[in-house]
Amino acid sequence: MLDGLEVTLVGSLSGAIGGAHGLHLSASEIGLAASAYLAGAVLGALCFGGMTDSFGRKRLFTATVGLYLVATILTGLSWNAWSFALFRCATGAGIGGEYAAINSAIQEFVPARRRGMTDLIVNGSFWIGAALGAVGSLVVLDPHFFKPEIGWRLAFVVGGALALVVIWLRRFVPESPRWLIVHDREPEAARIVDEFERRVVEVGGSLSDISSIRRLKMSQSYHLTLAEVAGVLLHRYPTRVVLGLVLMATQAFFYNAIFFTYGLVLTRFEGVAPNAVGWFILPFALGNFLGPLLLGALFDTVGRKPMIAVTYALAGVLIIVLGFLFRAGALDAAQQTLGWTVTFFFASAAASGAYLTVGESFPLEMRALAIALFYAAGTAIGGIAAPALLGALIETGSRSEVLLGYLLGGALMLVAAVTELALGIAAERRPLEEIAAPLSQLPPFV
Image (cartoon, rainbow, N blue to C red; front, side, top):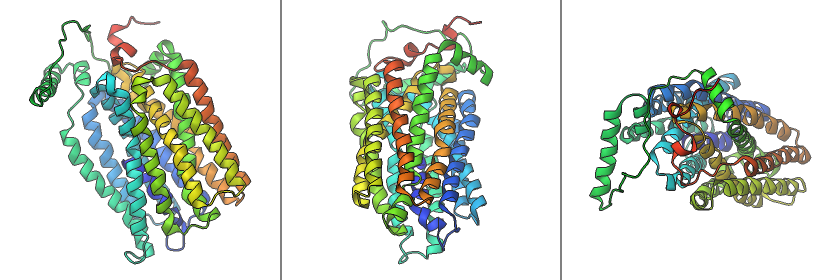
């Protein structure tokens, strides 16, 4: 939600931030600030990912959200293009670290039969934040409520303050029992699981007989260096590495190219007033959340491979079609928004499926760091340059130039669909330890 709020605020407020009452930024400078946010996310993921595996999911929840809180408020106090980009970079660092912490926790808490649906919905909550950002932008940009030079700044300050609510809620999230076991803290893990079971009985549920379940003995704790992690990835899981990189990089380009610059497209090509952009972002965001919400269960029943391939392919085809219609000037702002809403209904499920894949595919001892590495690599390869590239294409004022960016995004999504069909993993309804055995269960490799 916080990531969605941040991205939408910049997209919806881009006209105001760059305008006469803002920081006087060009389209290229707004695109570069978006790229700075993504670069910060890469650095944050790399920095906090390993710490999440070493110090625990729960501790990093608070640290990463705390960094987000401070940096977002500072963004609202920016005084020029460089300070804006710097604070956006720091904000991204908090969000990047958060992805590793929360996705590893989701994977380790949720039963195998519901893991796909739950993971998609939680990652899809990005778009609840996006909807909040869209609505908030309508309020802060309304001159009846706030002066133009104050409204956009207030949006960032309020967005940062919302992180306090998140930090308070996180007090009720326990540490992952799986992580506790790996770090020789079995009594704590047992207490947490006992509490889960007590609640099940309290609401009239029954506990399954576990006598026939295969047991694993965790023989040692692992404190892996990046070099050791690279060795595990490349020696044991090379095809999964390729799959994860392709899925993460292609969706990163697709999303960051389109969403960070959509407000600019509306204001520069469709004549939408800057203070009205939020009305177009709102349905766009709601459609994005409905994708994971309505399609999520199919990832557990139909299966990972067919659903990920289909959603990537449909998103790729639809962006290409919309790109040609955009170049022809055949769509007004409302029709274009409807088209993007349908496109991202599928793209949102596809992107969440990418996070699901990298979280499931690697051993417990390095799960958070693996998520961080793939998030960082995918964002670095596919995402950082995307907003700057689209911003530069938009600044030309040529619909044909913008079409080139859309065609590239669509082609990348189609490549990802083919890659999933070739290398995808049937992880649905399987325990994590069956998909990727803990390192202590594997023979050493040379």
